[in-house]
Length: 113
Image 1: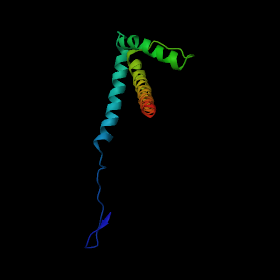
Image 2: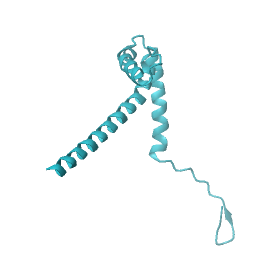
Image 3: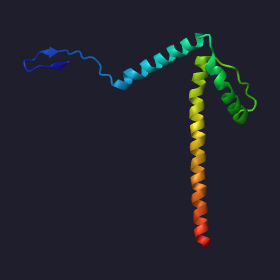
Image 4: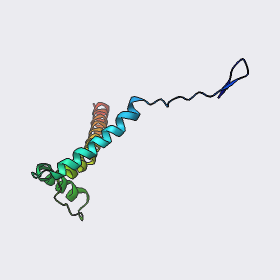
């Protein structure tokens, strides 16, 4: 509400401004949920069968007492997302440690030479 120069009060209604991300993110999540729901109804369960050995190996290495179920298509893809993040994190940490060890070994060799 604002006051005009002739002492009138005017109420202006404006629509909220949304950014592209505020619109795209919920739509992407909704689309992902719909795709996962559809993939679980497909009779050929290929993703769960293909991703089962990978999930089993990771569970055996990190969580030895875990029981790994055979999952449907959509659920297997949902499990694949954090598994990919976990694998990328482990790889990045391994690479960082390798670079640090290699750099330390080079400095040690230079000091002795």
